Image 1: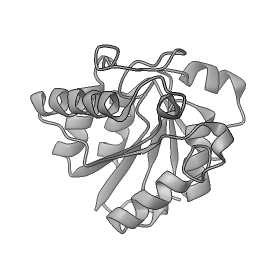
Image 2: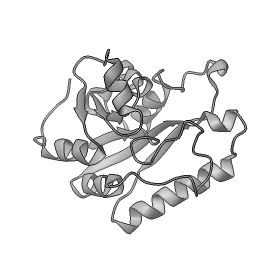
Image 3: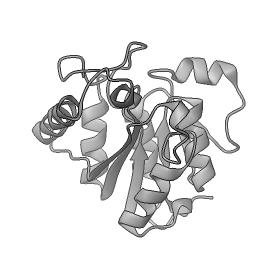
Image 4: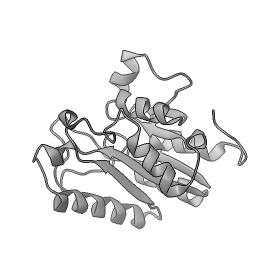
Length: 185
């Protein structure tokens, strides 16, 4: 099975320093939905791993988060794409959970759900915490310049071997072009 893990905010949809709190605020980055559909059409399954501390901060509730994800799923379906599973951390940093990126808890849960070794599962993110979580789980890491990506790249100190792409569409083209027997790591 070919599986890729994507961060949500800043990779699939536009991010905000004030959090994405409603379906109205959830807007896809140009080309991201088509990129997911292209991955799907080339045999890739897609999982999302996203910190959603806005839940723990009381900025939105589960109904709003579910509505945001319903909007994402509907928009993807309209272009022939899908996300197979969404894993999210609802906690604030002070909760000291194991699922909040940069810790690898969400990735471990994805590995358990799909039964795949993380060394074979690339992850695409726009922030250091995304890349750190992926690297801690053993995933090959891909940084996109959208969202917080430019600032992440400027800061440096990326996990070894991190590949950098302009956006999810470019990362998807790279993954699709890999030989089918390519193993990462």
